[in-house]
Length: 126
Image (cartoon, rainbow, N blue to C red; front, side, top):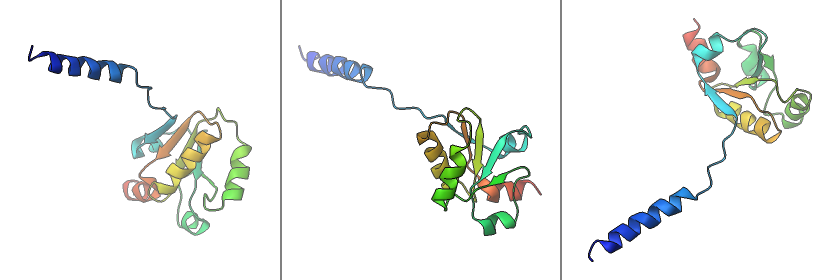
């Protein structure tokens, strides 16, 4: 009789976790330098840094759209096909992640966030 409370607790634990809703999965994938370096040249790469940052250097082929200018950013993004894969980067990953979340909320389905950002790119791409 002493084992019943333990068995009952284990049974309840298993049942309760079996019916928990799965966490929502987003289409945002974190990518590394190697993935960015080997992108197809037709890929859409968005540099979401400020103009001053962009003018100091950028990943070849990137389109600059400053995330800190929300009206311009949103207007530009609304023109894009939501099924097009979008690669985002900023200086180190903070703004690009925020931009990726915004794209997700706007209905984009293929979003890639370069977590290391241009600071990682500039060190590894010398």
